[in-house]
Image (cartoon, rainbow, N blue to C red; front, side, top):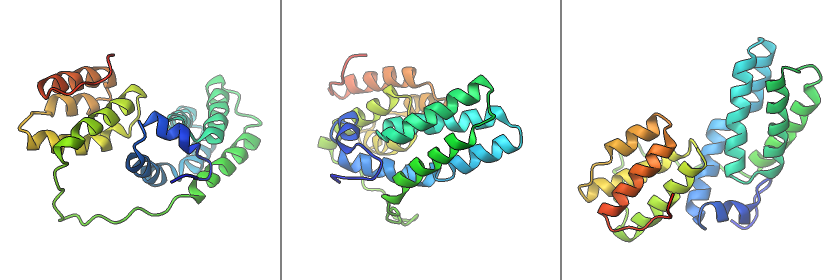
Length: 198
């Protein structure tokens, strides 16, 4: 994955510690969860639901930033600022630009490989646990909702080692990302794994 339309791949990989499989998963997740974001913003505006439109724009901005989708992040930032100011007249040119930026990113995405529901999830190898925890920490540091998905791999590995991860999962479910980072470090200490200091 050296080139991806709308994505600054080197920047995205730098954010994720060079973890290409994680970037691929995040891009697939983006396609599943954000493909209709511009339509949803338009619909909310049409219904006068300014708060909902602003929320969707804010979420899209965060995800685009995490993926280093530079043009998309820039345009949706302008859209969010306009929505927060309440000045929604003349918003259509910005939304049209947002449509274009979104289409550019989506054009490079391919459907994720289907995962059989009944197939057991193999436990990650022990040597991968530090990478998994580091990747999760990077997402938590950016308040990324993708942390919920990354947590699945970490929990599987922790369960294999008999380490209780329920407190960590609870913090992430509540979107208490700062708390989750502290808990993650407590677990890392137990496992003799070093993570960057807070």
